[in-house]
Image (cartoon, rainbow, N blue to C red; front, side, top):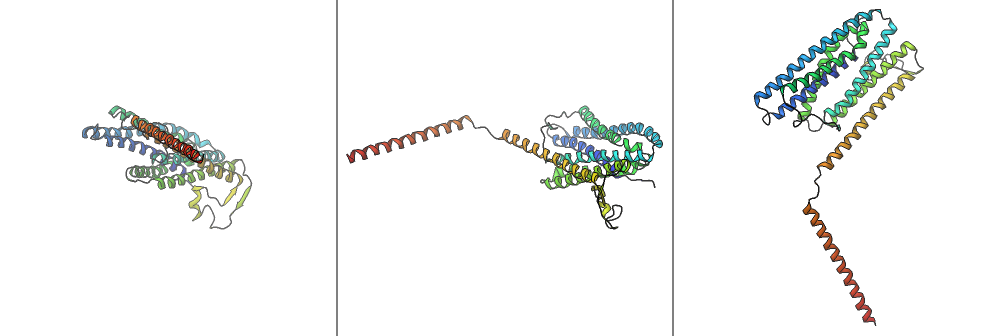
Length: 335
C-alpha cells in the first residue's frame, strides 16, 4: 500500500516554515517600529516589498536546488531492498526528532521567555536599507528552505516514502505558517506568554521523544529486537487502532522493549536538562541586566551618607563621655 502522508516529513516542513515565518515577522516588526521615527511611509512600503520579493526568490532558488539533488537520489533508491528502506526510515525519524527538539528549545526564546547573551537584531543596530533587507531575508529564507532538502535526503532515498513528500509538505507548510502567524500575533498582543511557552515546548518535546523512540525501534526491526518488557493485550490498547493510535506520535506503544524504554526516558530526560540549562542562562542574563540597570549612588548621596555616619559617631562619643562623667560623680559622692 502506497503511503501518501508521512508525519515526520510534515513536522520537518512545519518546523522550517515556522522558522522562516518568524524571521520574516522579525524584520517586519523592525520596519513597522521604525515607521515615523527613522522611516517615511514610502520608505516603509519599499522595505516591506523588498522583504516579500527576497523571500519568494530565495524560496524558489532553494526549491530548485533541492529538486536537482532529490531526483537523482529518488532514481537510485529503486535498487534498495526492504531492510535498507527500514534503516533509512529510522534515520529520517531520528532527524525529525532532532529538529522538533530544537524547535522545543527555540519556541520559548521566540516568545521572550528564554534569554541569551547573543546580540539580537534591534532598531538601533540594524541597517534599514533595501540591500541589507534583501540580503538578510534572502539568506535566512534560503537557508531554512535548503535545510528541508537536507533533512529530506533519507526520504528521497526511500522510494515509497518519497511519494508521501508532496502531501506532507503541503500539510506541514500550512501548519507551520499558521503557527508562525500565531506566534507573531502573540508576541504583539499577549502580555503573559509563560503558559503558552510551557504548553507548546512540552508538547513538542513529547513529540520529539516519540519520533526518537520510533526511529530507534526501526533499527530493532532490522538487526534484532531487544527483550520485550511488557505487552498490553486487547484491541483498545492497540497502537494501530483508535483511540490509542492518536498517542503514537508521542511515543505510545502497546509493546515495549528494553531499547524503547531506554530511548524514551533517555531522550525525555535529555530534553528536560537542555530546557533547565536554558532557564539557568535566562536567570543569569536577567540578573546581569538588573545589575546594569540599577542606578549607582551619586556623589551627593555618598556625601550625605558620610555626613550621617560622622554625626552618628559624634553622638555615640557624646553618650560615652556623659556616662563616664556620671560614673565619676557617683564615685565622688560615695567617697
